[in-house]
Image (cartoon, rainbow, N blue to C red):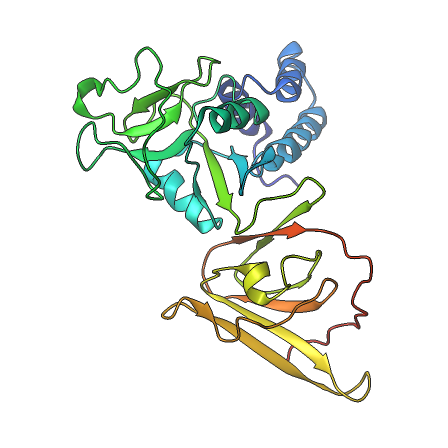
Length: 304
């Protein structure tokens, strides 16, 4: 028994594809649906699930690295500027800030932003014409398009890449009539080296189990997780044998903005439980190298 109407979902697919004309694979699916309106329900069901898998993957779109930052296109729905700002912070970063021509070109071209209107992290809502990056970085580079920074109707106070294919900027109101995604930027303490690897994990509310995948800095909890409000790390350490040990519990203190034990050592291969005390899914990004000698780990027992 189907718990949704195939025809309704087909209309939703068409609307979503129309908002994403740059996605050839999605357009292919839409074309197949349009070819024959008499398509069987089972065929439509199959096409729907194929599209659904494709659409879900767009929540975490292309990712690139530049300097000390990782950039990712978040393209799962249409956001207002303020919604995008909040979502980026929930994912552990912020709306991207572009402070040089090289950075502008790399982000626009490598993320393949042609035809999109992704939000960026700047606004002049406090004082018209006084543009500021939300991170407090110096505003000393701009790349306005021909109609950029015109404050049409005295309500355009939010920065985005314009979909004119050139990487130019434009100002817009907090609600954009055209489909709008955003660019997530996550800054790192050290520049990302070419032979490093990046792995993202999305941690839902409650307990999740994960293994530390890379050597990262000194492999302290601070190097690996950084500032992680609402997180508690549980590591089970064995003592004399494989059957006896104790729990090491390390929580992030939001009042003091640090971990209870910032030097807590978590070598690559360590299995830990992570407690997310918030009501939101949070992203952890691991960036580092694969060690030559992995820590010899044992199965982590069920939490007490």
